Image 1 (spheres, rainbow, N blue to C red):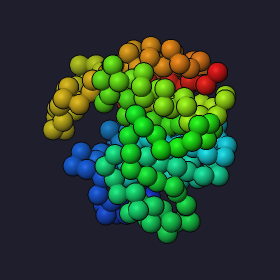
Image 2 (tube, helix red, strand yellow):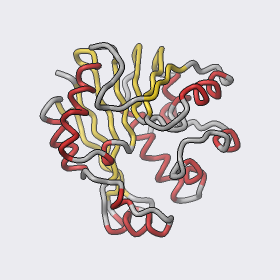
Image 3 (tube, rainbow, N blue to C red):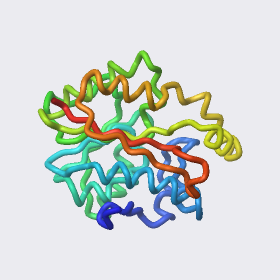
Image 4 (cartoon, rainbow, N blue to C red):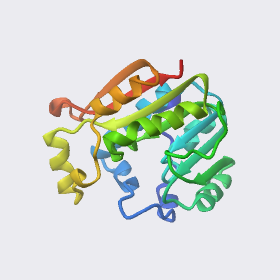
Length: 218
């Protein structure tokens, strides 16, 4: 892992004041073993981001990628359905990081055609139904520059993962509708695949639990 792509978080107490939603996983990032897995999946996505003028993160949540993205891009744009954009922006503004955040949906991105160098989605696409993926990818493709990249991360559901989340009080079967294979297949219809990266569990005995896709607008 490039040390420059190591996930850089705000002090833990600053995230406590950010009201994302009831299922916000930020506290897991600070747990001994599970935290490493949560951080690792984000780091794998960040490692694929090439840098440039503008990046759009869809589903930015509490902005945990923003410190890293600020070192790679001139402008950080974000779109999220639930978060208070002004609240998140003000917190990072205090750290010298300017962001351009909006509320909205991936199905109707409020940006002009060919605006972004990169679009990033971390643990977002699995929440879409298979018949919604094409519409989402069409919008992402529209706002990317020619040759621009889409980087996403999605869980690879294994019995271990389902059981682990149940222990944490989450039934992911109620919110995960598309598999990593369905997502990759839909992405390949509109983009050129650069690479697919698989992440194993920590410890690795449970096999692959997360997948990062890197696709390019041809």
